[in-house]
Image 1: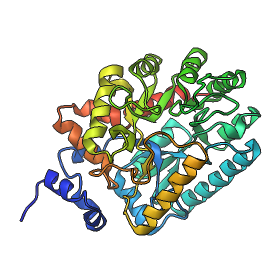
Image 2: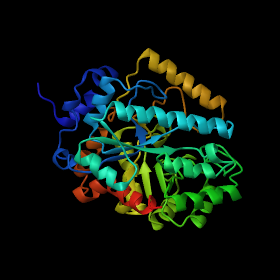
Image 3: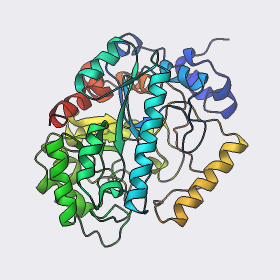
Length: 377
């Protein structure tokens, strides 16, 4: 019996098949040849996948998944999110940085450091996956902007001023007051511009985004989000916000999260609908992919299900959860639960009539351009 590629992907949506299927069987369609030569960047993600919040050191299978992914680089979240003393958050960031630096040193055949745009091309040429360090919350420097220079020196290249809740810099997307940036928040944006750190507004409140647009002199990004027009959710961006970021030269990344399908398990079609809507609103030069997930596929074991349930309960209790975060809304797309999901998406975009040039932009070309315009100090 022979299967078409689409039949195979359909078969692999079951947990058992996903666990048993060889990675080499997936995404072998028309995108394979040009995909190997493209720069492919996950605008928000991470190596690994064994646990809800990741574990180190990476094991052999996880490293093999990174190599199979074809990713040139991954924007990796460093530190934690949510309310805690600023100095405590700072310590978490430094510790996390040290751990990931050790991982790169331990696996030079797989991982590389990304500090400059030229490092991205070097990683591509060497068939390595580079790690781009970023923060998803500004709590670690909310009371001391001098720490931003320290973070820049340590390799942080992307920072969100706020996560879902309020901090001293401004309001996140789950803060009902939606009061925007504080005076310190505006100074933080200016400082990041001057240091060559990309400002990421993915979790920011609506007014915080408006304020950032008036302050920033460099392009900004929503590295991982969805379209509010397709699925109303506070984490999603309106068409007006999408146009504003694009008009400023920025890039909007589509994630792979249950919110794309209103809390249901998303599919590749959901992801592509949001990508195509972004292209229609912002133009093909301003759209990317930021999965907000791990490279390795998720196996719905009893251990994972229990760990995920505890994580959601913790996020709810701390007030950082968003609507449609449920104990059964797992953070992957049913037919993209493989390391080479980017190649599968590229193949599907070509099948839907998108040009190779456009697909390469969405895979990573647009982010390379954005980094070249924002990382210059």
